[in-house]
Structure formats: structure tokens, C-alpha cells
Image (cartoon, rainbow, N blue to C red):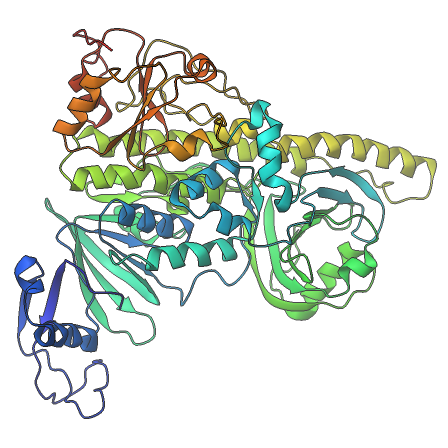
Amino acid sequence: MGAWRKCEFVVHLTGRAKSPNNLPPPRPGKGQITPKRVHIIKWSGWLTKLSRPIRFRIMSICERIGMLPCSEKKVFIVGGGPCGLMLSIDLSRRGIPSILLDAKPRTAKNPQANATQARTMEHYRRLGFSKEIRSLGLPKDYPTDIAYFTRYSKQELARFQLPSSGDADAAIRKIGGSWTGAELPHRVPQMYVEEVLRRHAEASELASVNYGWRMIDFEQGADGVSATVEEAATGKQQKIRAEYLVGADGARSIVRSALGISYAGETGVHRDFFGGTMVALYLRAPDFYDQVKASRAWMYWAFNRERRSWLAAVNGKDEFSFHTQLKPGEDATIDEARAHELFQQVMGMALDIEIIDMGTWVAGHALYVEQMVSGRVILAGDAAHLFTPAGGLGYNTAVEDAVNLGWKLAAILKGQAGPELLASYEFERSKLAKRNTGYARGLADSIGNFIPSPALEEDSPEGVAARKEASDYLNTHARKEFNIPGVTFGGRYDGSAVIVPDGSDAPPDTRNEYIQSATPGGRPPHIWLDDGRSLYDTFGFEWTLLRLVPGAGAGADLIAAAEARGLDLKVVDVPTSEARALYESDCVIIRPDQIVGWRHREPYDANAVFDQLLGHVASTSQVATEAGAL
């Protein structure tokens, strides 16, 4: 299972078995493995010096008994969705081995989330595969408009036009304003994104990615976590030991349940739409575009009094993701005949469809946990927060959990961090979970509580007036929900123990407007450099010292302090008036998750700055006590 690495193995010595007891079948010509004796072999330098035949014999034994590697410095990730996979990738890039298990046999088989926000694309860019993600899904020239109809084949009520993926690179360089950044959003099904994330996770020799395995239970001690896992197909059980366990195992999280942590927030909200039992269909409709004469869109909404729904184009040819809400009292048992009926109601005409997959889910959640860290066990993704998917914030918030957590776990495991660093994950991400679920709830209210007039589809003066009312409302709503740079870029970690405040005030947090600011705790201001690169492309993968004044001597004490701590600090010089005006400082430290951690605005002590950033102090009072010079 996965490549063999510098880690610890539980090895059963060979012998001829008297009974199989769930052990794998022998290879041709070989005896069955018997767990006669158990030894711990620590794969350190001496083992790598053994002869190749001996090393491969040990590895063969481990493979044949199906044992998973258990690292001395390892993170055990439960859950192979975007959050878990992103964390695995991030840890590997930082030299930290991890094991990931997911009970599903593979990554997502249906579309699931449909929107990758711009900030998430910037994180994919940091890891080097944003272009790969942007190539997925719709054809390059396919418009990503959001269009509203009475029914898909009937009157168009409203439309919000957005660029195709092929135009995104040129558009982001020109658009400016609130969308100033390195990337625009991308409309792509989560199932495609997960395939890319899995491929990149599995590419590292430090990561063991295993689908078809579930965690049964775990216990934690002062030095780590021990878990029992089981192969779904065979029932074979094994032990995994790790220093930290991350539960990224979704809304029905086994990890969260075992910790006794419950969601807080709001649930069971009833709305005319996005508040009740939803039916999800992954379907094929080869004739859809022939029958819908309106300009193509990425997302189609049906808005009428009989049945409301939305339909997202998956491949721009014949595959779609369809969601509709059942009315109170309707049978939630859905078979293919019922699924066809629901689709035809909102289509407005007969159309042949093939159902690839179907299921139900419940809308009306705005949930989060108050506690994301319990000892050595950490919650992330849907295990820590659950959204109604207005605004497409759930999957994107989960990815940012992984981005925030990855560098912190790496710093802890490398001995660089203080006790406040892991605590800061809970403070920073629970704050953002509450913020983002609140925004999603507001957007769900906006679309779900606007009830169309019964006259909406009438060929009458009342019908014309009703359609005008709906058109005005939906055109306004579309810009509320699908033009959200403030939500995308504006999340901040003000008040965190690992952010060094400088007394400045951040811009207000608003949904549809984003103002760039270098006030510590937020996303770094972005500019395009004269050579055509994004400023973000110059940042180091770990820490960055951004120098905005001419001369090589600025921040020498910070460089020395970072070197003394073994930190990988990249120095980036951008001595332009534009950059200096944006950052309002001569020197800025960018955290590994591309968050402004500190900027020079007053005398400072370089060691105290890094003490703060790495969680060695609980308060911010120690940073400015001694003068430092640039």
C-alpha cells in the first residue's frame, strides 16, 4: 500500500499458516504469512544500508501482510476529500510523512461542489497545479454565466455574464479593483479536482494514500495517537500510530463523534429553496443544448411556483449536475422514474436523460464546531463546519483549513513551534468557519426566501409584471452570490496569537467588495511585476521576507533570526513605489500560508517577532519591547 519510506513498520515474520484468519492469499509458490512474532523495525539510516535483497524481502513481507507504515513523525489523515488530500500534499512538500485513509473505494464519483474560488486557485497556484485545475471541466470557450429561467426551455429572467476559463488569465491581469489577484474563480466539479489532488498526493514518497480503508477507533496519549483501521472489502484490521490525527472525514465524522464534539450554529432552516430535502442527480442529457435556445450558461436556475432547481454544466457537452428541493410532505424515496419526473417539471418539456447517479441531501445548515483541536486530534473540513452551498463556500473553506494547518503541523513536528501555534489553528479557522457559514446562510436566505408570484408564467399583464419583478430581484441576487471578492479574499485572522499586530485597522469585511491591505492577519496585497509574474510567484514556499526598499541590508536581523531557528526564509526584493505604497512598510514577513504575519512600522526585536509568529508567546506585548533596525 503505497511506497516504502523512512518510517516505522510492524513486521510479522514468515512461517506456514494453520489458518488464514483474514490474511492475504500467498503469492504463487510462496507460503502463507503467519503472525508468529512481531518486531518493530525502525527504518532509519542503518536499514537503508542493508543489501537490496534483504531490504526488498522486508518490504515484501510488509506488503504481503498488508501492514501500513507508521511514522515516528507522521500525521494520520482520516478523509480523502479535498481537505485531506490538500493536507497530504502540503505536508509532503514540507518533508512530513503522512498516511491518509478514506472508506470510499475512490475519490468522488459525482460532481459535488462546482465552484473553485479565486483564493483556492491561488493556493493551487502556490503548489504548482492551478493551470491543471483550470484545464478541467468546461471547454475553454464555454461561458460561465449564471442564468435564471421560469423553466430551462422557457423564458429567461436574468443573467450574470462571466468569462470563460480560456479568458481567465488575460482577464485577471486587467480586471483590477476588488478582483486584484493572481487567479480568478474556476467553475469545475469537485470530482475532477479530487482526481488531480489525489494524483499529486500520491506522487510524493512521503505520502501513503489509501482508499477503501476506514478508521474504527483511536486513542491518544501524551506522545501520539494509536488507531485501529479496517479494510472495507475484507474486514482486515490493522494499527496505525502517528503523532497527530486529523479528522477530515466529513459531516458524519467518526473522529468528531469519538471526541464528543457537536456542531453549533443553525440547522433545520426551512426555505422555499435551499431549506429542506434536496434531490441530487448526476445526469446525461445529449439534447439539452438543442432544446434550450438561450445562450449557454454554466449554471441554469429554474424559478417557478411548481418546482425550483439549479443545473450546472459538467463537461459542456452532455453531463449536468441537477439539484431540486422536495416540498413538505413529498416522499423522499427517489427512484429513477421519480427522478425523471422531477427533471421534466423544471425542464418545461420532454427531454431524454440518463441518470448516472442520484441521492438526497439536506439544505438549511450553517454549522461549525467551537473546538477544532483536542490534544493531538484535529478537526478540519466538513467535520468542523457544514454549509448550505450558496456561494460555493464549503469546499473552499475546507481547502483553506488544510492550508492553514499544514505548515503549522510541519513546524511543530520539526521542533520549531511553541504551544500557541496549534492553538492558533483553532482560533483562526473557527473564526473563518463562523464567518463563512454566516455569509452562506445570508445568500441562501436571499435566493431561498424570494418566492415567485403565481402569475410568473402567465401570458398576461400580471405575468409580465411578475417576470419583471423576478428579473430585477434575480439580477441583483446573482451579483450578490457570484461576485464575492470580499468573501473570497477578505478572510482575516485578527487577534490570533501568531499574528503580530501593528496598530493599524483592516478594511471592513464586506461580501462584494475587497480592499487590499497589508495590515497583519490577512492576504498579502497583490501586484503584477514588470516581468509579467505575479508577486505571489516570487514568494517562498515556507517563509518570505518581502523587502520594499532599495538596498541589501534591510531586515538583516530578521534573516539572522530565521537562520538561527532553522527556518526556510526566502528574501524577495520588490523596491517599487507601487509595492511600497500597497504595503506601507519597508519590510513584511509573509507566513507559509500566504498571510501577512508582520510588517515593520515601529522598532522591533527580530527574535520576538519570530517567537510570536511561531507560537512561543501567548500575547503580542513582547514584539515591540526592544528596538531593531532595518
